[in-house]
Amino acid sequence: QQKVQQSPESLSVPEGGMASLNCTSSDRNFQYFWWYRQHSGEGPKALMSIFSDGDKKEGRFTAHLNKASLHVSLHIRDSQPSDSALYFCAAIRTGGYKVVFGSGTRLLVSP
Amino acid sequence: EAAVTQSPRNKVTVTGGNVTLSCRQTNSHNYMYWYRQDTGHGLRLIHYSYGAGNLQIGDVPDGYKATRTTQEDFFLLLELASPSQTSLYFCASSDAGDSAETLYFGSGTRLTVL
Image (cartoon, rainbow over all chains, first blue to last red; front, side, top):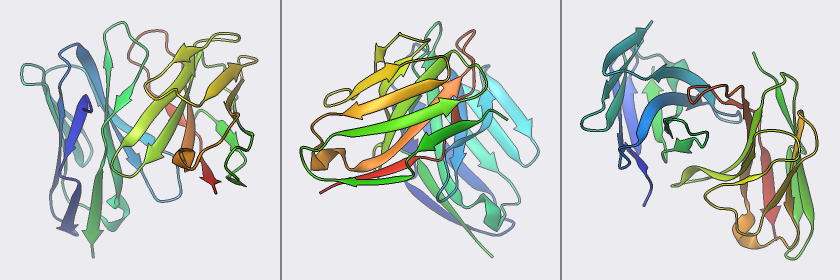
């Protein structure tokens, strides 16, 4: 069983809409979380990190972390066709160096 | 931005063949990683290293060897390739002075084992 689980597997939103992606960890030792984005034909690139409970906003992107429930989410407002990509949640334990990824959410933003 | 270069970009081999995937990073990062990407499984860690000569086992190491020859270079070896190793392979590096460092990925190597 994967220790980082993402939902939904795929998501379709209209241009200008809000996309919400979810990630849940089954390992309470995971303390640091990232969202990575992968466009077709490219390697994943870090989108944003979140290490503390609450919200973190970067432009159109807002990440939310609830360590008690081991839940991380990513919200993309005013979605653009260029946001269409595969999004990964990633986690790492305190003092660890092994980064564990979820299975990904494929986002499609339609013009 | 950190530069991670993988080669080859595509590779086709036969069952039982010998394959070496190469990765070079030019930002003096301590940590380097090999992942494989498969639909439904996301990115799974094969091996990683925190410096020249060091090797750590990841989550799916069976059938793979790795070697870190220098700070910059990390190789993944498949000595008896099998069709189950057909996948998209990514190398990544990070400047992991603590637990909270970003991974920088290469563009990937698509391996097909016939």
